Image (cartoon, rainbow, N blue to C red; front, top):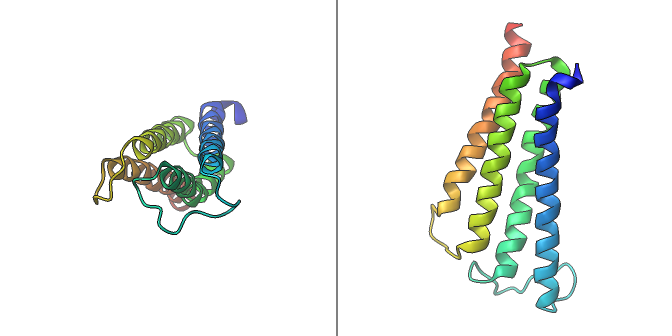
Length: 139
């Protein structure tokens, strides 16, 4: 059963690696500023890479549970492996692009360019939830 979900699981692992990479980048940026552990300067805003790297990591953590739980449920209840894999890879790629834009563009503008990739990942997330609900309700 799990062999058919190897592409979906690889997307989950890729997302975990992205989050670990973000944590590493945020830690290094934070240490270069010589701030006390666990603190950000109160006046840091989007023009600070320390702020952006921290927010990128936090944003990924805030959104990870929303994709991991439905995707694990989807695997265990046997949703279509191709649909799940496609949705998860769309999610991962959009989160990577969101991360890159957050690192590169210091803007307080809303919506910022990264917002569009957040919306793509949110749509993929809703699709995974739909796959689970469809399987549970209509199967």
